Length: 295
Image (cartoon, rainbow, N blue to C red; front, side, top):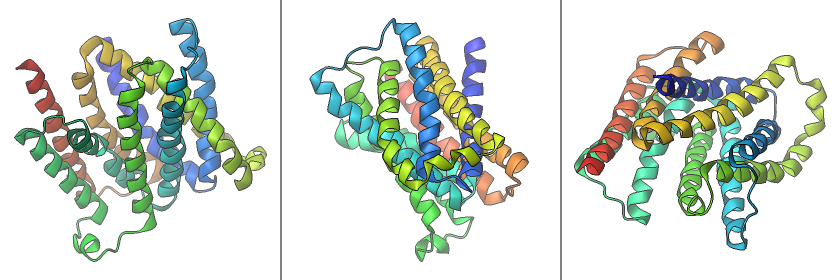
């Protein structure tokens, strides 16, 4: 029972990253915000990796470039677009768009790695994408048909694309590294890549950041990145990746609820309807995987 509680908390923590990110994005630059988030995460990840695995393994020559690409896509690009997008659109809407990550990963895995895409999984993809469209358009599909989406939505779409690239690259990297070591190295690499852009953006202005800003950095680095990762992979180890993955369905719901209470974002029918469709779609793609493995 404990592991299920940890997975539920992980989903809540990940939902909270949209609230913390939205708060920071209003007055902290995207490069600086991403740098401090992963500066905190990198220190903690190195410590945890050393404690759990006894050392931080030395990368082989063939692993260096893939790890750099992981840091570029999953840390640098994802988080820059994450903060840029959250400066412009509501946290709840952003969470629903990003919740489609598993759907796009399934599509690209089918195209690149020739993974099977059966009827149930295809139905789940259609339902999930429909939910995202409903939430993005706020129930008015003419907004999308006439190309009236803003930069905020565009940045969050790029955020999703970055994570899909990170996930697909991770399949190759993790064949020779543990998940913990892979994430630690990608976090370190991404942090290093962020130093110069963050400095050019005005990193030294951090002396003027408020207590709330520093709390948000810590929340994003510790709860949203390190603890979330450790507990999620603990769940994968104990109950399997597919069952653990089902808890991701709670992320957009927790983001919407926390955004309402902490950011005063409105609760709309299109937002909840979109979230419900996205969650249903993700569930169908996951249950399809369960059925495939049981046959």
